Length: 430
Image 1 (cartoon, rainbow, N blue to C red):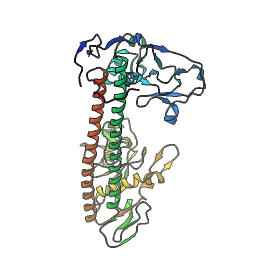
Image 2 (cartoon, one colour):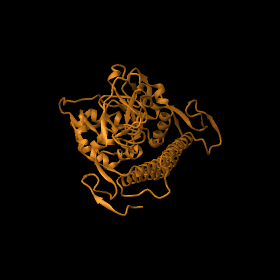
Image 3 (tube, helix red, strand yellow):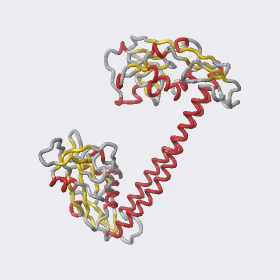
Image 4 (cartoon, rainbow, N blue to C red):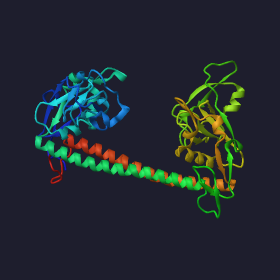
């Protein structure tokens, strides 16, 4: 439902508001607070996702303040906090009393307001666009300049209407978030079910008359006619070249992949570096179509199939290249490695002091299932069909999530700027 009459404003970020709303400068609505000397209060952190909450919510992901606690600023429940990233995500609402970094700006209301309404206003997309105009500093040193911000305008509905809008948006955003969480859980379940079905396919759990123990903990029983062989018996394993940043004479400057370029089931080509290779090294380290690429470092064991995504590419020594024998289907082994990796097998065998490494010596000794090539082909085809079906369902769920987020963003914007009115009998103001 729309308002009957709108009026023009002097605010660059909100051109029109309802006729009966006020437009007021920040300095007349909020004041800065810098109360210190409360070292025994709980430590708080400002989060774009959760607002201002107890540091324990984030565990070890935040800096631990263990001294000079008396210099931290006191925050009361219902205050608003301008954080170091407010120009990106808006102003945060404080859900409890505590103390926070002196680098933040705490603002308190100068007059009665409905904080629910302003909680949504301060996180709305048009307000965040305003925040980008109140920034001082450059790059990582950027922060909101409060004196500049105080001169900007905010819409101010009557207090009763603020309460209606705040309560309505609280309820609607909760409903939208619950819907999004269900869709995100659906995506998790679809992926879990996909991996379970892949495990059944690559281990031949259905469709065979007799089975035997594979003697591999992750796989259990397999069809009696399948073999189990060490990896070096079914493929050639090549560890990539050490980094070379200089031309040592007749070398060639070529693109190469390292562990960060290797994902589960896909090559990551957002950033591909180059280094120098000799002619003989180019023969050894060049990736050929249908080679499997296995991460030696980082998240060890990540495996993907090379499909000639680049015309010419090589590997650095944080990546293994697996070139399979003709009687092996690389797609089958890509998914065998996927199941091993997701089951934690690679992590259990790697050398790790500070950084994990899946050495060539460890890799070549891995025991692999070896079905007849015809069955490898059939299993690989069935997995790709499964992947297509699941990908379509996940894509649909993600589209619904994106549309829900867009709807929530649009609803908040229209409500807090007076482009839409709260439907009658649809709220309970608190």
